[in-house]
Image (cartoon, rainbow, N blue to C red; front, top):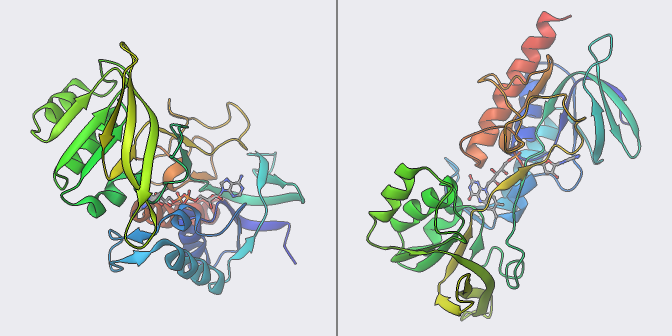
Length: 316
Ligand SMILES: Cc1cc2nc3c(=O)[nH]c(=O)nc-3n(C[C@H](O)[C@H](O)[C@H](O)COP(=O)(O)OP(=O)(O)OC[C@H]3O[C@@H](n4cnc5c(N)ncnc54)[C@H](O)[C@@H]3O)c2cc1C
C-alpha cells in the first residue's frame, strides 16, 4: 500500500529521478517516486547508447530496467501515477502532490520530470525517429561516420550540433528558415569555417523521406526542403536528420510563478540542485543545464538527493 506521507518525494522516474531515489535510500530516509509512464524516461526511446561510462554499446531499455531495479531494491517506493499539480509549501513547510488518485505529502521534493523535444511536425519525422531521425547529435552522431546528414535549426544547439557532426560525417547540411541565425555570432563563424558544412538558409523542411535497408528496416534517405523565397522544393540525400529546434521542460504541474524559471521554461537551480523554494530541488533535463545526457541526469539526481537529505537533517 502506498504511504500518503514520506520524507522525500520525486516527480519522474528517468535516470535523474531513479538515481535520486537510490541516493536518498542510501542516506536512510524514506522516498516515494512518481512515474506517469514507464520507468527509465527517455532511456526507453534510445536504442544504442555508446557514451555512458562503463557501459559501452548498451541499449536504453535494459539500462532503464537496471536503474529501476536498483532503486526499487534499495527500498524506494515507486508509484505509477501522473502528477497533476503540486503545492510547494504549507505552514509546516510540507509539499503536497496531487495525482488523479489522491494527495500525497512530503517534507522535501525533487523534480526530475525531464523535457520534451520540439518536433518539426512534418511527414516522415515520427515514422523514422530512431531510424535516422534524432533529437540529440551527441547521442546519435557516432552512428553516421562518413555519412551525409542534415541539422535543422538556427540556435546555438543547431550550430554546435553541426560542428560536432562535421568531425565525423562526410558532409553536414544546416537547414534554417531564416537568413540569420539565433545562435551567437562566434558560433556562426566557427560553423562557417568548416569545409564540410553547407548552409541551406531561408528554407523550411517539409518532409523526411525514407526507404528500407538490407534487413528491411525503415531508414532515412533524404529531406525535402522548401525555399521560402522561391517556393522551390529540393531533395537533399542524407542518412540522418538531427532536429535541434528546442525542447520544452516538463513543468505543467507547477503553479505559475512559484519557482524561478529560465527563459526556456527550465527550472533554475544552483550547483546543489536547490531551486528558489526551500526544500524543492530539481535534477536532470528539466533544470537549466548546459548538457542533457544520461550521465548529467544521474549526476544531478545524486546531488539533488544529497541536498534534500541535508535539508531534512537541518530542518528536523
Ligand atoms: C532518442 C533519444 C536518444 C538519446 N540518446 C542518448 C544517449 O545515447 N546518451 C545520452 O547520454 N543521452 C541520450 N539521450 C538523452 C537522455 O535520454 C536524457 O538526457 C535523460 O534521459 C534525461 O533524464 P531525466 O531523468 O532528466 O529525464 P527523462 O529521461 O525525460 O525522465 C523524466 C521522467 O519523468 C516522467 N514524468 C514527467 N512528467 C511527469 C508527471 N507529471 N508525473 C509523473 N511522471 C512524470 C516521464 O514520464 C519520464 O519518465 C537521448 C534522448 C533521446 C530522446
